[in-house]
Image (cartoon, rainbow, N blue to C red):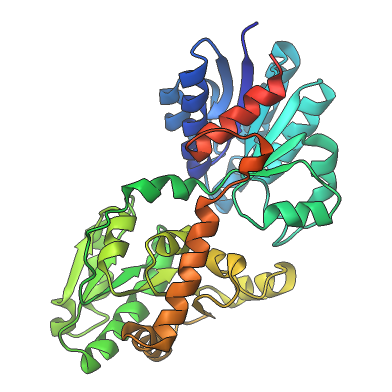
Length: 384
């Protein structure tokens, strides 16, 4: 019998992660049929897309979502119809919780097994969604080591920690790369983040250079970010001699992180890359007063960097409506020189790195990579 798998990824990162899972399924069982919603990565891995998430509006931001509500509803109906008519053995959901939890309900009612890879961050907010997961999701492939304990405390036992997808990049780390006297800055992948974070980051660099004039800085830009756009913001933020000491890169984050001495990283997934590279850093974010109130009201976390969620207090977090460049400069200087502060952070980052690389080997999930372990879960659930 041919394995039938339906996939649902509604965002760029979800398409990338799920594309590798599809590739792992096809490598082991070339005749497997994979259909559903995804993007370029899933298609190139061999999936037959009935919905392209980049064209349907699913991969867009909040304001675009409002304008694309009709298209997203159409995508949901299309996938629901496919589930009912095609009856896949396993439905794989990736992130995108409001859409995918509703799709899980459709799949469960149709008698399909449901695997949620990269589940909703119910440990951070809207914990009530655990009840929906209990009803409609057969298994979870978790990417954070603490998620299994969280779900078990809430009465859900079917969780396997497969490791974090970034851990698959661990083999790409180059052991002989030497750290230089530089400060790395990652201001984010969205224009408003670069506009808010890059100027205070570089003003902090200017302050640090007043103490360590030999320093150079590197601004690592996301692949979708124009260097010209970032330079226009930077050139008015600092003195000409400071601007001249800044290098610009669209390179590989892990490699750039291996080279730097310290960094200021926008709070988010890049913090985990910093841990993998064992790079001492300060996690920063700057948002509107409204967004800050929303976070304080609805997010059940005291620390927001994913590194600190795994190992509380590992790195310093600066989360302000307006990022204070003087404060950031002090924090960067505190972890720059060898000593107890830097040593403690390096110890904590090694702990996080180890946690990201490990997985639940005892739960019969074979595979050298995270994607292969998720694929193994699919084969186990299909019971062919």
